[in-house]
Image (cartoon, rainbow, N blue to C red; front, side):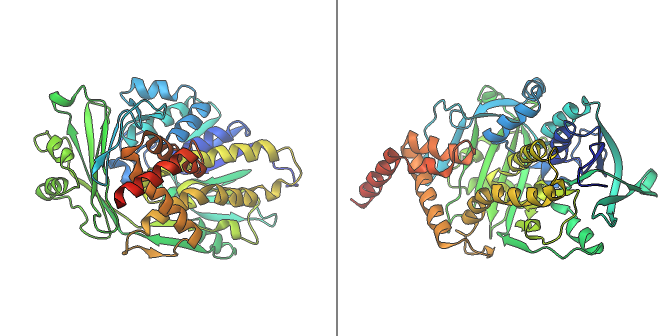
Length: 449
């Protein structure tokens, strides 16, 4: 194959959100796109590959905006399926450092649902694209040729008993946290990539409840925040489709929530505020309690590779996983797909296409750097967190951001600015507005009096 990439067949490993969205992007440039997924690709239930799907998931405002560009009908279908459109400030109650944040219309709105409905609805959008096909199969490795192109080894058919090799002009690994790309590349002679790990020892427990009659007209979600380093517990209620609440208990480092019914309720009672406990203590459960332990955050540094396949890209959680507490995961995955669109649009008509995959990995790393620092910087406020600590400037920025967070119950400007940063609609520079800095100074002076 010459230096110009053929545009016939694209392969996507994994039917995750990043896999589905990247397939939709690839269909703009390739004749056929095949999504290879080992789970039941027609099921609307939780896929085995997403055990965290039972817990609260949120789509940040930036993620919603980008998805609306890629799938213009997605929001409409989500709402028709029962998702709720909520404003992150008007409809969000946040208990922070002993106070509730102000509520007002901010324009920072997204749709809220179960992860299962969200992924299922995106899949239905993708299925409308006649250039995309699904294949039920298990990718077991890579093979390569002398031109540094890779193909995938697949087991398919009943019980995955049939083996074959599938060729693609471009191959995208979107298989999530359990990606085997690092091992696969080593198996065919590439160097083992470096990795960065941050282990914060996080535990979740989540249960669905029927919304009691007295709360069914209440369009809001509730978050009782923890407070480093002494109050690790937090919890939240999120309304989802079917007039249900998803209720999640969370802790970091110690006192992790369990799946025991009495302990789950007691955990909610010992949060910094008892509003969640008061709302669920007499509510009717609609599911068992699902537990989940997070292995931590991880970056696989593919961007540092000296040699890289000329048709292979790694995206989403397969390259960078975040502490799910901060709600960044789905949005980061979507933004990675948007970056893929930008790269393909720019480079497919150029003669340096063989460098496209590695250049993509380098740019993806840069784009992920800020949310990574935001997430891991917060993790390191807890003494039990292990791993490579952020630099001194990053720690200073984190401390300043925390001061704005604690100001937000007392300032609409602080509340909105902090949310704009968290929702990725504004850069962290939004926290340095002169009026906001004055308000912060006044608050600190008041507390010293």
